[in-house]
Length: 105
Image (cartoon, rainbow, N blue to C red; front, top):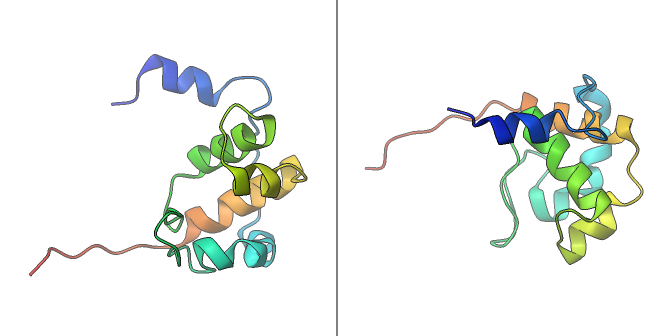
């Protein structure tokens, strides 16, 4: 269950909820693939998997890195020049990736 504070954060001013274009996001994700993989599967242990992540979460996270509300040396540099459209497209791309989960053996 999502708390009221989480919903409020997602709807806060400056948080773009515009629907992005996954195809455009895939092209823009080329700069992200070193750490997060083009398929959304992280290549580095300290970088999270992004494939299948909730689109609104990704938009909020990128906006937070861009504004400085959330800090990470690499992500702050990468997110800084992103436009609202770039953020929406990247979020749409990673959210569009279907992830399957299997029980451990």
